[in-house]
Amino acid sequence: DPQVVPCGARAISSCTHMLAGTWITLLSLSGVGAAASRRAASPSSLAFLDLDEFDPVAAVKGIPGAVRDNLRIFRAGTGAMWRNRKAASVVRKRVKQGGAAASYSELLLLRKSGDDAQKLLQAGVVYLAVPELLPAMLYFFPRSLPSTFETDQRRARRYETIGRLRSKAVLQLLTTLEEDAATKKGKKGARAAARLETAKELLRAGPPPRAVGALAPYLPSADDDAKQLQRSPLKRLEGAALKAGCGAIGLSGPLPGFVRRSALRKHLQHVAAEDDVLAAALGRMSRDELLEACFDRGLGAPGASAARLRRELSHWLSLVRTTAAAGIADAAEPKRDPDPARVRLAALSACAVSSTRAEAGAGLPKLLYAKSR
Figure 1 (tube, rainbow, N blue to C red):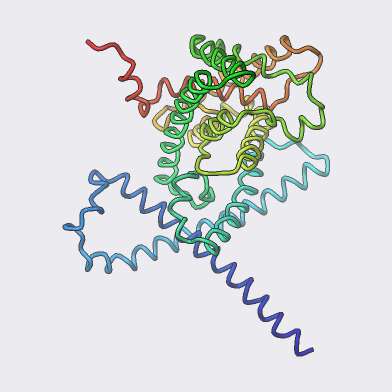
Figure 2: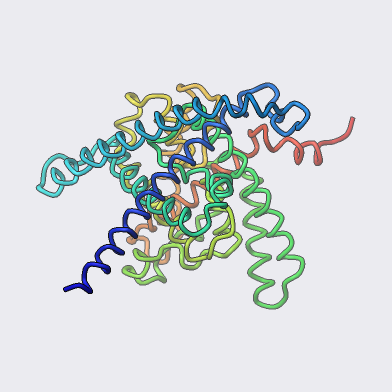
């Protein structure tokens, strides 16, 4: 049929354009990440803004090297993505057939394999729609680069960004709670005042094991339908708290509420599944794995030692058990365990507050409230 050929040709052309766009996007992301890392590591990291020092000849001569670097990162990243996908498929098949349960490293492999494929698709969509937003995407979503494309410098920069976003989320939430309590009236004002008192109790409590007790009333699930709770454990989470929870894990920027809620729920459920096998893996985890696990839970600092990170994760596991027990004791139906995602959100909140207190990036607010000499 002569009419079929043009349609098929258009379909092939569209698929080719989409694939090429995705590849170019990932290459661009790799280049942006590498360039940002090099600028961050340079003592004169803002020198590129000085037009007097700009050398167009050197810039042109540097293009071939930059292209080679980007191609090398791109090839290594795509190759690692393919190997991870095959390895994840083997793990899924083994578990589905009743074999040994997935270990902590295998759970991470399953999560990253799926996340990287999704990021690949998102990168293609962004390239086709608004390619100018690529730098903004990296800024607002530090986790948007597929894990296999990250260099060591880019990974360190991502942790620093998440640490800043975490501190910013905590401070903004506290400001919002005070503002709501002062301005809202009626039932909304009463709820705002109650949330403000909870925040004060959490801040006065100090370390996470004591601070998490302030959040126990929010954990019981006795009033919720079990199936609905499993589908949407964060349904009742207020907008400001939802935004802060996303900020604590490095998700910021202008996003619809349902996207934030879905991303945070997915993250907390992954963490809950990994916590089941984390204790057995702590002694064998590398520093990079420990750092990744800590930042997933509102803990850690880029310069922390492996021993400190391991201690923080051990405290996290104890905190989760304490939080769940507090929720059961406070529940109207003690036999029903609190939802794992809610438990992790409470623990994440307490840990994010503790990390912000120790974070160097929150130095100006500390100076603002410090007593003058």
